[in-house]
Amino acid sequence: MALTLTKLLLFSFLVSSTVLTAKSELLISKPEKLTRFHVYVQVKTAGSNATVAVVAQASTTNQSATSFGLVDVFDNALTAGPEMSSKNVGRVQGVEAFASQSEMALSTSQNFVFTEGKYNGSSLTVVGRNVLSLKVREMPIVGGTGVFRMARGYAQTSTYSSDLKNGLLVVVYDFFVYHY
Ligand SMILES: *[C@@H]1O[C@H](CO)[C@@H](O)[C@H](O)[C@H]1NC(C)=O
Ligand SMILES: *[C@@H]1O[C@H](CO)[C@@H](O)[C@H](O)[C@H]1NC(C)=O
Ligand SMILES: *[C@@H]1O[C@H](CO)[C@@H](O)[C@H](O)[C@H]1NC(C)=O
Image 1 (tube, rainbow, N blue to C red):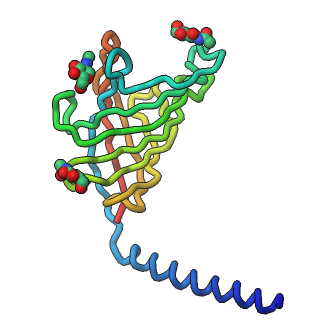
Image 2 (tube, rainbow, N blue to C red):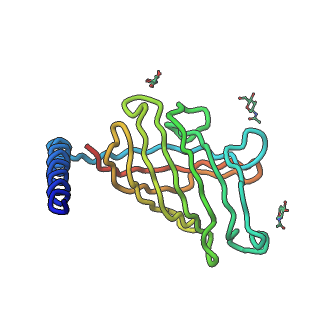
């Protein structure tokens, strides 16, 4: 009985690894390519139609110089150019938490969803640490869907403009992404 079970397990392992090999060969037979592009992110932190919502904070957050413990959810517009009125190319949706007690640094999880041109219907997922004091912040691209299946790479972001009075912020994301 035990022997039969072992044989059965071995058999199913062999079958599944054959299927897996066939699938990964399909992917590997396409050459991986590097795509570089950038988008602008329109952030509205205050007022009506704000695109960022604070969802939680610690009892100590108000006393923290680094906003430690604050968590927000965002749904920001992606545009082709830096102006709010330039062509809309998608959204970036995600969650970020102020996760450092010694500097302004976010732990972020963001999905860039594209709705225009050749990337329409595809998405890129960026997960990483965003150190707000740096001029250029770098975060890993950990995956994607559609044309960005199996994506890996990195994103570099910097602030294009900020209008604190009206809670408006424009940041640019440069993507360096390997995909098939
Ligand atoms: C908020 O969005 C609504 C609907 O799109 C729009 O009519 C209104 O002008 C916007 N308000 C501001 C302050 O942007
Ligand atoms: C922290 O500050 C905000 C804004 O001033 C206030 O609404 C909130 O009640 C404060 N929270 C705590 C826990 O003190
Ligand atoms: C993007 O794809 C959706 C779903 O296929 C489609 O409805 C929409 O018209 C497309 N948009 C553009 C700009 O091609």
